[in-house]
Length: 185
Length: 95
Image 1 (cartoon, rainbow over the protein chains, first blue to last red):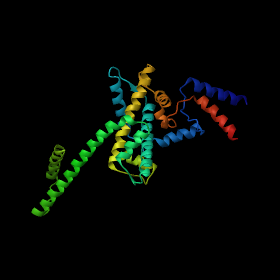
Image 2 (cartoon, rainbow over the protein chains, first blue to last red):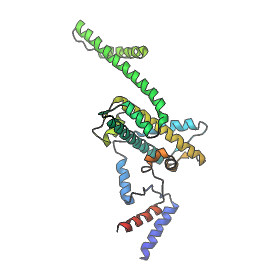
Image 3 (cartoon, helix red, strand yellow):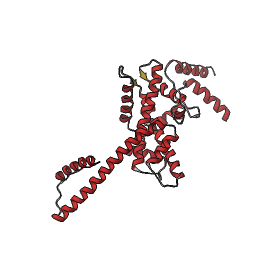
Image 4 (cartoon, chains in turn cyan, yellow):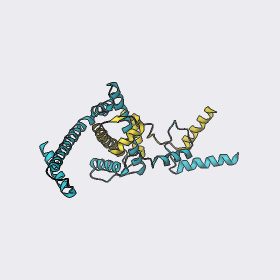
């Protein structure tokens, strides 16, 4: 009896003194051990955002916010950032899916996502997103034009000569075609 | 981009998404991260700290309504002591 109470007191003091804080969710009544196991399981999961990219985005923004001093970002904050981004993706895609279902379509398109953004209270993203979407569309259009052009060129080649595959030469042509495509747009 | 597709698919495998939509989700996530960083940074400045700690993120999530959807995933830290006490209460309720 005595020993157990002293042990719990010891644990309490340890928790108080050291940073033995855990971010236990209120609803989670699992033991800390199983929680640790969960954390271990989460880390190697494939459905995670690439750390390096998350770090770069966060760091870039921070240096934008405070150009005079260097901010450091804790490891756990970075993990929280990437997890938040993951949840955000789920949240956004689920909302977009709902919107898509409402209009009785099968495939989620860009407008659904934009509407979803409005719905989940991030309307200030709309403008820059639309701009970059236009850019993306133009790029894609350029690519399509390029592919079409390549097909034509190939066809012509096939018609003119016997099929002769020259890897390097074609690649050069591709690059030229890309420049042409973007220039036309 | 591919990673995002996997993430979306992982939740609902029969979801169909166009390339454009994927792109928008990608960009939106980037914007979201930037906004979140900015908010956390201002919280950090208010705290006069030079490093971005977990508690800044969690307090931003608690304070801002539109981050509510994250509150279950980035909860405010509580001391292990309190968590254990709460667990005991829960256990007694169950038992």
